Length: 113
Length: 110
Image 1 (cartoon, helix red, strand yellow):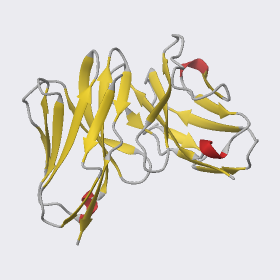
Image 2 (image 1 turned 180 degrees about the vertical axis):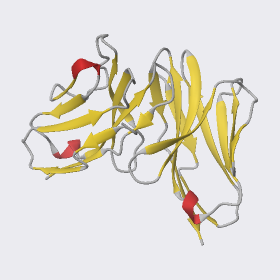
Image 3 (image 1 turned 90 degrees about the horizontal axis):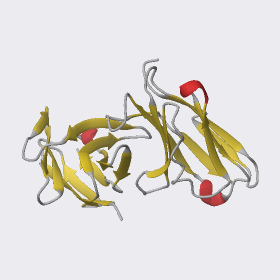
């Protein structure tokens, strides 16, 4: 594809519901990152995938957050039992190799009512 | 703890002005420093700097890195309303970690 794509672009959910956010990286990019950006804040690292290696989950804020990357390509970020403080823009980025320039997707704006 | 600090937090200028945005950092295993422009949701890449003292330039934007003093500046000359955005600085540490600053929000008035 031409760039990183994410879906949905916007998601409104009720507190306590589960949500799934999807990221489709640039074809051939082996590194994939998830970030969270709350209003007026910088990017908060959540999780990193590199090829078939074990992901770095050190940025996940709680055990309600999990992510998978299937076949080294598409990734899904799942938030269980959403809370209002989970409201943010969730950004996905990919790069051709570790430490290279990251290319960002358009993000998913999550609103938890 | 690794950190990236940007200043100012926000800035309002008029078209035609020149602005300088600052980014200082304290990280272990520094690899590179990157600047991004964020207008809506997705940050777009501007520059990657790895060597001290070498200016990167693209049109009216330029950036330079000082690895001794641990900072970088992003200059924008002859600003236009289209330059209004949040400018993010990030530093890569170790093999893959990106540490982002909170950004500088620039508003250019017509």
